[in-house]
Image (cartoon, rainbow, N blue to C red; front, side, top):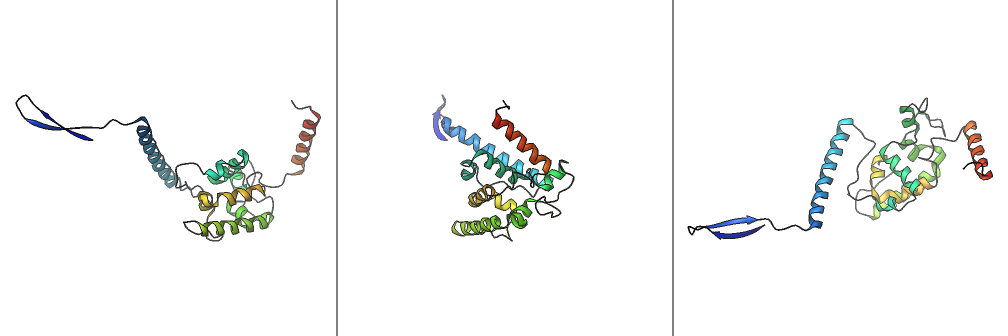
Length: 203
């Protein structure tokens, strides 16, 4: 804002305020900040209304740079797990794509994200590597320390300090890629499709 003094014909001096011209970049930044604020407010109200505890929005506006650099399929698995719309027994049973939520790898009654990241014996070694890496990384950088038994999966996936450790975990497991080992019929079908492709019969 700038102040200007003007004199009326009768000699009265008046002060007027005129806004300074805004550059295009400044205007875009203002619109972006307003949009981000509106989006964050809407997300908070939506999560509160639906009592959604699976997803926790990140604190920063920009996408996670670590996940953005990952392979497309790996990044897709990360974000599917982050939102809760992923290949877990719990979600597939909810969508009626599976008759129950049992873990197909260890037969635990409910296959959740927490089960896969912390408890499923199929991925015991990978879980140990994951949580050791998470603990080391969060101790080095500012912010709360993430320990295995005190950290929810929503917190883990929302914390950018943990992203590389999570991506490494997904890279070395089938978590988020499949809800369990393929049944015999599925394995035969995959083998058949693979043979057709090698033979050039599939265009």
